[in-house]
Image (cartoon, rainbow, N blue to C red; front, side, top):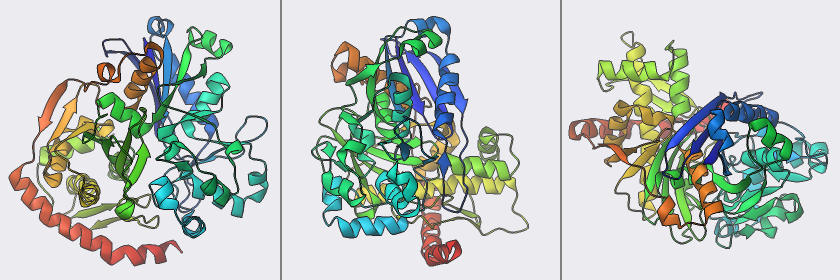
Length: 486
């Protein structure tokens, strides 16, 4: 049995998976995000640890006892600063934090070949510019840093006592030489750090340590091995069987991601495309990333008074009316692909006295679909061919939203077993690979197909017309967003 733990933004998920790939038991614990100032987004690392314990203890005891290895995954880019005592020096600065735009410009000037080394342009969401911000604005804290960890690797530290990370998550720091899978001295030096501040690097299937004895006893488990794991998107790809060149998935979690696996390093930073290492050896991937996807739906559900996002989905599906006037720009946390604009903001446009909660719900589903469609376009502009996408994440539970997405992308969407488990399921697979040494191809098979949603021609034609207006609205407002943040 293999335990997968996902340190997400809205919560921690834990699953135990058997050798046949069946999910035997799962647990969840919620997390909240602190936004103390405009553009700031933070969490307390201790909250991740408390939520991890809660999620694991929610698993059935008989299956916990049978676990033979643990895999970790989680939200990427979070800057977790550790002092000499092994404790966090300040709240972690998260992936959707936009405060370090100036530092991104500094990095691009300081490291002329930054994009060639890392495969990415500097964005505020990445870890490196966050550390430069801390250096500039909190020098006392910066001087005390012993290690910089990513969220899942802070949890690993609490689990095993080891400072370790994997290639896929580390590629999202902007400190990794992504082609050669090692830390870049040039980029580290530009942020006032060295390799001594970094955890040891492992491939996602390698063992990094063992569960501490007292924790194993508390969790009702043996002192099992813990493997490196991967960033949430790479682990989600492993769980979805997206491991070979040309295979891809759509993740509808807090953020929205279109992920394409590759067998070589092919950077294309223009248009906000990310190129990272995969969680499997000698593989890479490209991503288009939207900062607010299911989280934008959650927000609209809250302001409209729906009991939960499921009620929003149900209301829109029951109404079954595409938007005619209302348009939603879902940039609640700024945006990455394709705009790289931390100042972008959410907008409802076209409201009238006739607008009700059903219309706002529909506009929200379409608006996120339009934002993701910009990511699809950016990937296609880079030369990528996208024939179909598997769907994972909490948003995968709505087939109605899937129909909207498939139609605006003009791409079939494939829904599979365990689709909403996502990265935690992939982390469990990485744990299995790490301790059994079986072939990747034997473990990383796509889960069984539950449903395929094809584009609807009439819906596609209507939505493509609306997509043009969506894009023109962003273009009209892009400068106003910056002025509104000042």
